[in-house]
Structure formats: structure tokens, C-alpha cells
Image 1 (cartoon, rainbow, N blue to C red):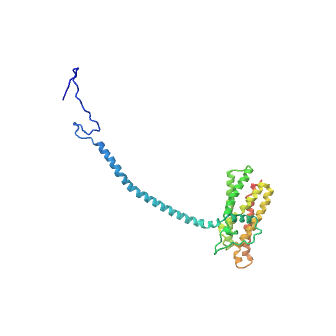
Image 2 (cartoon, rainbow, N blue to C red):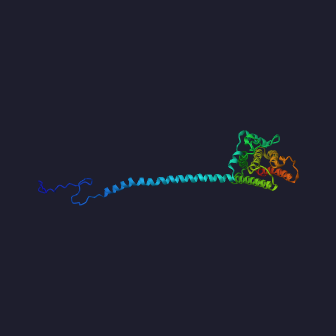
Image 3 (tube, rainbow, N blue to C red):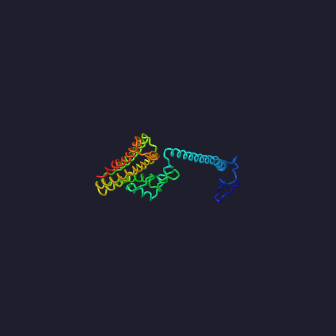
Length: 299
């Protein structure tokens, strides 16, 4: 080893070359090279290179199977719901009762308020099937009863608001009361038809439609009361009550008395008298409900 002297007389230390961590030469005093970092990097590359395809190979078929199974369950559930719903609520039949247009609605509203001049009350048929309401003014519909019920609730809220008696609870009770009385009326009519053993083509939806027509007269009566006071309310409501009574008599007599009319027999005998009384009772119940559900709205 070379030791050189400096001019000062001190010996100079030998030059030692430090090996950088990244250099390729190894320390001669080190028996084995440190390959831990390299092996760890290799293992990480192996895991990243081989683990992802394996995971994708396992996850993609499972996700596709889950999606297919989920869609199959959804379709089966939809079919089951549609089948059970159609059993209790005939959706296909409801479409018939909402097949209306603007002309039909205008004519039917006029018929409900002025039924005295109307002559033909028979429902038209086409190949043993009643035609849609938009083609026959005598056909029952659910559009006018549904819209009239909603409008009646709004008009009731307006009447209560003008008297400083409005509150959401009172309006909710008003709507609930009207709905409950409608259900009671329809159930009582169905029970009466069963007890009298009437063979008729009247359905529950028909009875709901006919019972819902009275809301038109109730709306007109309440609006007249708001504009002209109690006198206007009683006069207009009386007119609407008479109109709905005539409308129900002329409409239901063709349904309830259809068996006797088809046989060409006059309305006589105990059974036919019961049918006639039932028709008049259903028609007479409409003015009672009209007054009961509106008189407290006018003060």
C-alpha cells in the first residue's frame, strides 16, 4: 500500500473508493450478495402479473351468473305480480273505463247536469262487447268520477280556507270520509243485488263509476255556495240532486231490470217489485250523500 508524505511531514491516508449502493461491484469482504430487494420486486411483479388474470377469471363468470340470475328473478317476480294483481285489480278492464276523450267528457258532464232531454240510454255493443266510452255517451267511465273526487277535495279545501277553518288534518278527514262512504255505498249495493238475486251485467267497477258521478253535482253545489251563499247552494244542489236521481233511474233500470225486459214481461210480481225498489233506493241514496258531504262546507 502506498503511503506518501506531505510537505508538512504527516503521512497521507490511503485513498479508499466507496462503493455506491447501485454499483454492480460487490464488497470483497462480503461472502454473499444481498438479493432481498430483487426477489421482493420479482415476487411483486409475479403477484401483479399472475394474480389479476386469475382474479378476473374467477370474478367475471360469477358476476355474469349473478346478473343473469338477478334478471331471471326480476322477470319471474314481475310475471307473478302482474298475475296476482290482475286477479284482484283487473288492469286490462280498467283501460276500458279510461278510454275517454274531451268530447265525451264534455257531453257526459252535460248529461249529468241536464239528463231530462236525453232519450236513448242503452249502451252500444260491438260483437257482444261494449264500445269504449269515447264512442258512447251512455257507457260508464272512471275518468270523470276520479277527477271529480279529486276536484271535490280541492274545492272542500277552498271552502274551508275561506272560512278560516282549513288544516291538513281536516282536509284529510274530508277525503277519508268521502272515500269510506263511497266504499260503504258500493258494498251495500252489491249485497242488495245478491239478496234480491238480480241477474245483471253490472260489475263492481260499474257501480263505482255510477256512484262517483255524484261528485260532479257536489262540486257545482259547493261552488255555487261560495259565490252566492246558502241560497245559491241549496238551489243548485237541489237541481243537481234531481238530475243525478233521474240519471241513475234511467241508467240502472236497464241493468237491474234487464232480465224482465229481455223476456218481454212487465214489471210485476214480488221479485220485479224488489228490483224496482232497489233501483229507486240506489238512485235516492245519491242526493243523501251529496247533501251529507257538502252541507258543512257552506256557512
